[in-house]
Amino acid sequence: MTLTRLHLTQFRSWSRLEIEADRQPVAIHGPNGAGKTNILEAISMLSPGRGMRGAAPGDQARRGPELGWQIRAEIGARHVLTRALPGQPREVMIDDKPSTQLALGRLMRVIWLTPAMDRLWTDAPEQRRRFLDRVTLSFIPGHAEDALGYEKAMRERNRLLRDEERDAGWYRALEAQMADMGAALTRNRLDAIARITAAQDGAETAFPSAGLTLLPGEGFSDDPDPESIATRLAEGRGRDMAAGRTLTGPHRADLGAHWGPQAMPAALSSTGEQKALLLSLILANARALVEERPVLLLDEVAAHLDADRRAALYDEICALSAQVWLTGTGPELFEALRGRAQFVAVAREGDTSRRSTMGI
Image 1: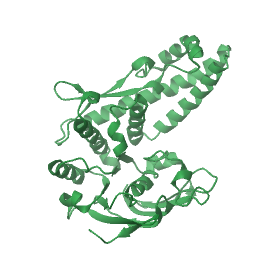
Image 2 (image 1 turned 90 degrees about the horizontal axis):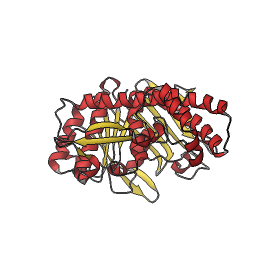
Image 3 (image 1 turned 180 degrees about the horizontal axis):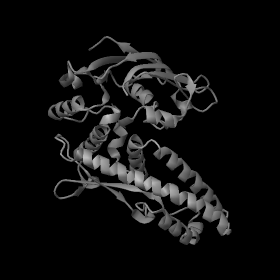
Image 4 (image 1 turned 120 degrees about the vertical axis):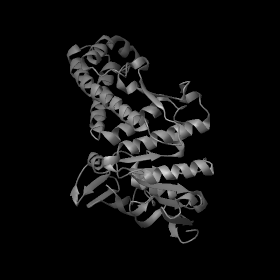
């Protein structure tokens, strides 16, 4: 669904902001610190989880957690409210009725790319696993429920391991839950990789396609069979007890990527190639969600692209069945989008961001 109206109250640097949008890309520009990324972060909060910065709700309030913040949005014909009131967890309302964050994932599919993700291929496996799970969530909203269930059962098993509990019955019950949900996590991830791969195949793009694999590592994290997962957990209790934690399972997953005829690993590629591969995956993710019309958030994406590659990116963006929001330091970065996008200029006055008429 298309995000047609966004209204922020006391979110980050914005005391108040309202933007109306349509299906055109939205190019937000202004100097560093003007509040551009804060707008994209607010949109990312219209999906399950902590958004593109992974921040706690109290840290997102302009005047501190004692005052809170509020985001209102119109998504298609639906009215959405999410807010963090002082001392309370984040609330979600859809059409004035209490709802859940998981319901947001079914209402609108949100994909993002931030400068911090440029280190994805050289970061720890945990970061690539989070990226893969965010991609998977865009295809399968129920993936979040499987992940929460698995994590809860694993925390209980880890507690038993640290307490050196010997009762096999307690372990069997938890391991059965972990096996069922862990197998579902792996199947979901493999399905997401297959859909991304299919969306890259045959696509005419200026960005290299990446070959993706779910790496098993030491944790056998590519195993989709619940019986073998349960068997492995049972057999590994002694080793896990010595470590005080569960050493095998989908929580140890890693995402592998390679490209080109020589199958160059992403981690060994140049910085520019790594950025291009990441862009290719994000575009493929959006392309694979054509029926859901996703919202794509690209923060400072043009900063390290030359003019030709920027123009190629904008052509691909305009051809996508997605609503795209971009940020950059100046309107010149979006010149190739002139006449094809909505431009929003922002500035900073003291500790408050505001819309500006300069440089539109």
